[in-house]
Structure formats: C-alpha cells, structure tokens
Length: 555
Image (cartoon, rainbow, N blue to C red; front, side, top):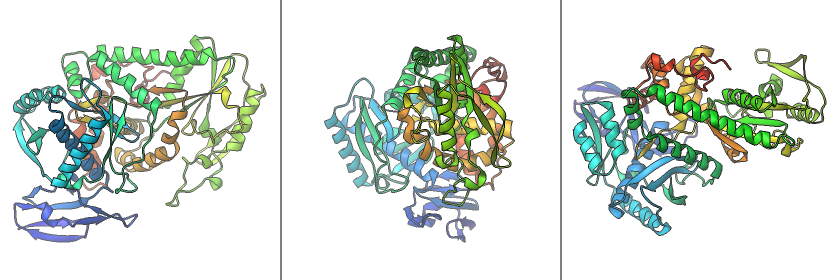
C-alpha cells in the first residue's frame, strides 16, 4: 500500500501500487476565489502536470485541476488541437493541417497549399462535434524517436520529424486518437467528450479555432478582428519562411550546424530596418507630428524600442526628447485599488491625466513646462526644476502601458500624436500543431531581467505574472488596433539565448514552492530548444533589444 495525499480535499488515501490516479478524482473541482465548479481535466502529481491515466507506484501529493487552472486550460487546448487535426484528416486526407499562431479570438489554422472554403469549415466543425459525441479516448505510447520521425515524415508533417531529429533523444511520446498518431508537449484530457465547447470562425486563408472563455467555460472567447496585429504576425511568418526557420526543429539544426552568429547578425539587421521604416513614416509627417507614444505589454522591449527609434530619428535630423509616463503617477493616497484591495498601479486612474494633458498642450503651444519626478518609495511626485520646451526639430517620445488608450489625453489634438504598439509576436512553431506562446516568451525575458537588474527571484516573477497578465488584458490589449504602427520585437535567436540564462534560474525553484509547477512546464518547453553558447551570445550587439534583458546594452 502507498499513501496519496489529495490537495483538493486535504485527505490521505491508502491505495495499492499500480493504482490509476483517475480513480481518486472528484467529478468537479471548486475554484477557491469564485466558488464555481469545473470538470476535472488533469492532475498535478507533486506539482507536475500529468494525465488522469497516470499510474501510482510511490507516495505522492496530487491536485486535480479543471479549466479554471492554467494547466487545465493548456490540457484542454492541446486536446482540442488534436481533435481538429483528427477531423481534418478524415475530411481532407490529401491536405496537411497546420496551426500557425495565436489570435485574440483563438488559434489561426490553415491547410498547407491553399485556402479552405467556408462550407468546408462547416463540415470540419460538424466532424469535430461527431468525434466529441463519440467520446473517444486519447492514448499515449512510448516510441523510438527514429520510428516517430519516420512516422511523421510519412504523414506529411516534416516539422514534427525535424524536431525529433534535432533533439537526438532515444524515446519520445506519441499520442493516438481514433488510430491517428500525433505529438504534443504535455498531457491531454482523457477523451474527446471533455471538449464540448469550441467553434470555428472563417479567417483569412483558413479559420480561427476558438476555445472556452476563462470567465465562462460554456462559451467561446469573444470574437475580435484585429487586422493590424494579424498583419504583423503574417509579416513575421513570411520572414521566418524566407530564412528557412519556421520551426524549432529548423532553428535547432541551424545552431547545431554552427549558424548562430550568422542568424544573430541577420535578425539584428532586419530589426534595424524596421526601426528605420517607422522613423521614416514619422519624418514624412514631421510638420504635423510632435509626439510619439509607445505602448506594449510587459517585457515587450518598449524601453529599448523607444531608444532605438530615437536613434533613427536623429539620423533623419530630428531631435527626440524623452519623458517617462511613470513620472505622472498620482500620489499614493489617490492611487486606486483592485478587487483584492491592493494598489492598482496599472489602472488609468493611477495617472495624473489632468496634469499630463495640460503639459502636452503647453508643449504643443511652444510653452515651457516643468517635468515632475515620481518618487516610488515616498509615493508622490516632486518638481526639481527639470524644464522642457519643444523647439523646431524636437519630437517628444513617451513610453507607457496606456499610450494607446484615447482616454489618456482626450484634451490633446490627436492628429499631433503618432502611436506605436510594441510586442514580442513570434510566429515560430514547435511543429505543425504547436505554436509557441508569445506570453511564455515575455515571461522568460522578464524573469532574466528581473533577476539581473532588480534582484527579484524567478519564483516571485512567476507568482506575479498572473497579476501582470490581468493588467495587460484590461489596459493594453483592447487598444492594440489604435496604433499607427506595430513593432514586433521578437528575434529568431532569442529562445536559445533565453534558455542559457533562464534554465539555471528555474532549477533553483524548490519543489514545495507554489511556482514549481510553472517552473517544470517552462523547463520542459526549453528542453526542446538548443541553447546558445557564451561565445555566440557575445555576438549580440550592444544596441540589441535582447541586451535590455541580459545586460551589456549601450543605448
């Protein structure tokens, strides 16, 4: 007999060796904050995500999770992708189904080699619903990696085959649904019957695969058409294709073949061109534009982007002057609080909008202002004689999370403002069915930078991340389409670079930490990526956005 401790009910269960953990699972789990109940989708065994068919041979701690838990949502989404893949193979056996990247409303999917008709999307939706009604099980087997590589290549999935080849592992896991094999990089739900909530929305050359909303799991996430964001992702996807690096397998092979420095130089050259293009657009309207606002989510490279853009504007003969929007916070006693009673520094009301609008209008009128300096320790602004006026060739550059929100400076002439949205929007994929989360990319950036610059532990960065994400969803993402230009700060070589710095930090997180499960997930994700070597990292130029996170920047 072995002892299993269940976190959900706080009880110990003596069971025999070889016991399947699903037998202990309740039908539903309750969310501690909302009190809502959710069907059980997967289980954390000693904080590591496992499928419900896991067999117990030793004492363990288990916690059953539903869609209210991030790991439950990931298990649902992986399984939904497999469901779509299986339905596609039934209806279109001569085509290869691909999941390209995330969209605000779901995942952008298409078929290699052509557009899919709207009536075919309807057929695909009905086939997926038929498979859900059949409640077919997802099964997993261990297979020789060479066999899996040959299997995926024969199925017309060269990205999966290339990834297996680049990893050089002896065994790998292969999942099956109704006789069709596929690979996923984490557990799935027990069966298709768990995937009742989804939808397909025609989009571009394919469709958007929609999954349940976080707030209401009985409905899919609201539909949003964000054309500018989609075009940015499309542009980056085209760039990946021209370099021949559209997947992690191809990236790994490039590094293993000694092409790291060449790739770094190529990526940096492209990014410099992008900054120059934005500067050219501003310069073309220099008689009208006097203010540039830059916004973006956490660790998107806003600070470096503003400095790089300033360089390009100087090349064109303009004189950029920078004011940090953080200087316009209200005094601590006027700072709003969130639903938990904590100061909400990311709310628009946390800023002195009246003073900001007054200063911007004064600058546009050719008047001089005195810029405040905000003391975060004392929680109040100070005026110390820092004065500014916009001269003939001057242009004001301001960076902050609310810069795209029209409610920030409604009293200012909007035609004098140029707005830029910066984010790290990677179109790189693990394989045909698994796109890389841009959120994970930014989390790794922030973890490395916070530990180096601010002395914040990787554990604290992980635990603060949900709060950061809530702020982004409220105050940044709804205003992306307001941007006059969207700048993508993602670089093809950055995940291999981040692996070098982030892996040692993640391994320091203790098994009893509430951040341990997320650390394990990130470590597993990084295990599919070949790391850069120190000599290759040295080739990253001192003006690179990446230097904002790893150090050595000269901007």
